[in-house]
Figure 1 (tube, rainbow, N blue to C red):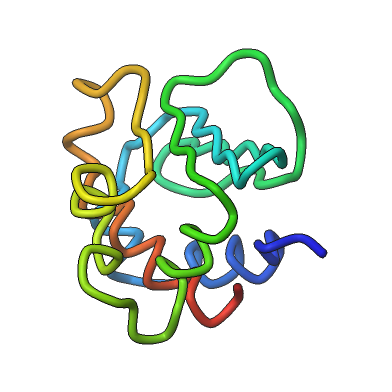
Figure 2 (figure 1 turned 180 degrees about the vertical axis):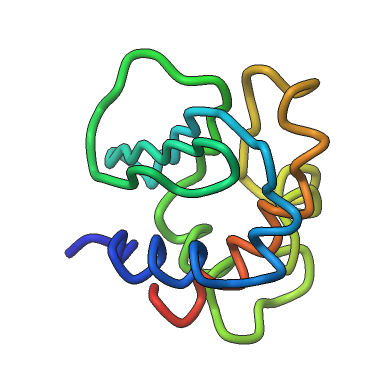
Length: 121
């Protein structure tokens, strides 16, 4: 069973005022690796234009972790060091790779995206 309900996440993010403000003008392809599964989220002009389970060879940023770590991060109330991506990268098994200079200005949008993913996970 897929961990992400990509349609629900896309709908929630594209209709969320906080996410839209934090993600404005963002253009990027973000690869999420959940254990062996791969997803691609395409941001275009601050909106999710596509989010699907696909193994795309090209991406701007990759966020990866074992499925068990993703499940912890997406709990309604995550345990310590799973509440935030940077904490999960520094203290858990998450990895963040790619164009980090392009990603950093949209870190708050990513945090909000994870908040919106929790009910849909």
